[in-house]
Image 1: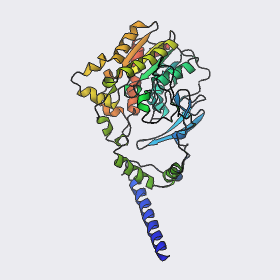
Image 2 (image 1 turned 135 degrees about the horizontal axis):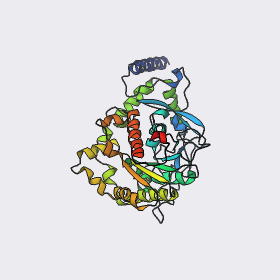
Image 3 (image 1 turned 45 degrees about the horizontal axis):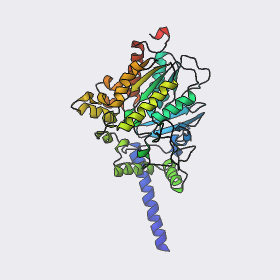
Image 4 (image 1 turned 30 degrees about the vertical axis):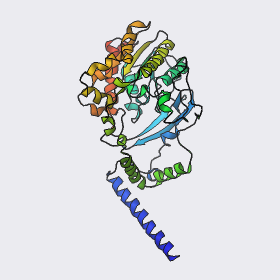
Length: 384
């Protein structure tokens, strides 16, 4: 049995050496992931955000109510707090009628930045009216935004700001795409038979209280992440092995040419239009501002297109241009692609495709200027 002891001793030495090396590499920030295991952190941290993301509502992805969670990646470490209904915002009790409803996905939620750095918070401070943040991560699309608004449009508000993200919105509720990705997620899709706004759910869809998977593999993975510096080396190796450039500072994943500003199918475009028509109808006579957001992919594609404005010939963009004159309420469309700063790379997190604090500030400045210059919504006089 001496060979067993010898092998065991060698393995212990290798593991300890690997752990020590991982600690040194992390401290000098030489890895793609340089997180301190929660076991070694002196300050109190909240549970991982994946425990706070739910899929039990009819619109799917949402947040646990009255809770706070930690969201961490290689370029950010933030705390996300949710109110009594699960929105990333302060309490929605005693709201004034001047409030504005914000619909959107992770860009509206403020993924990767602190609350005070989100575009929602900055717009609220500048306009002087509450902005109700109904943005959420987890592949939220226009059909889900429609369902969210129908469920909560009883809350006091004078109008809506709707973030339109072509990079995701055309496929987030496309059942043909998601049937090959994951049919167990409890999320709605555009109905292919009859009214597209009557949501379709995969028969195998399972409502869940969090995005974590209860399995032996997941338990072991969390133990390594929470207690060992080696997790940073293992995650870095995995990123490089997968060429998962979404998590690296180069953002090579955005070098692809496909852009939904230009490349959405006819059905994807008509479905997106149907969802926004449903929101406009539910909004009655309230003012509505659509904010069209370009991703880094869209910006790269736009910069290299022979005819940069060719996307404006697409059905979806023609809809937004025409809807301003067709509906009874005041509708305005703001295309952020037409307001880009000189250095567009600064708009996005270095490890992720979402807005950085700089990007959120840029977007909020453009949005608030558009609202004020066009006398949109009813604002306090001091903010004009």
